[in-house]
Image (cartoon, rainbow, N blue to C red; front, side):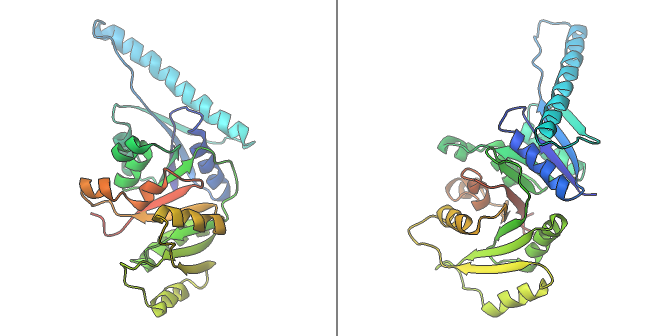
Length: 280
């Protein structure tokens, strides 16, 4: 069974990630694990015995808080909570802990809420963009305003490199939840325009699936994100899927940020990000 690691910091914004994961589990039998990373501050003047007792007491409180938080989200969705798994981990390195736990325990996806960020946080990274840029496990970023709705239409934004490999991953996800897929590509003057026969052959390979293809000329006065948002407004998908390069230098990320990580700062619909197969 495929597994989703659902992260939360107990904030109202983080509920969107829980709602989306629960919705996916209603459409397919995903095994959900709700995860909270915490750290207990300990006065240096305390004895070891007092510190240990305090840590144990706080751990029990935090575990109970996670259990109650998760059940409250299920209740708000009018969904019966069955076989709930709630895990807490003590760590100062939240992003690293999430990535390592997901990878070590062979999760299929990490689901996290995002609420956007300003210019400073775009440069130094939020938890969401850090996971997208570094996680080996695919990341689902859910904007905080998202409300429960069946996922029926997926927009897969593709650069057309490794199309067949990537489309297989997209379809593995979409067929489980019975959602249709629309492939979107923007032609660019800096790119070699892909032969239409290559595109047709790739789509024929998946003819038994509900796949549509759109190759569009972008508006030259708009950014990539602007063109993407225009396409989203027209298509009205339930979910966006993108693939990202992770093996670039710090300066490349700083001045030409990952399109998928950049998108999360303006996201209005959930985004599922896979790592490109060429990453090392």
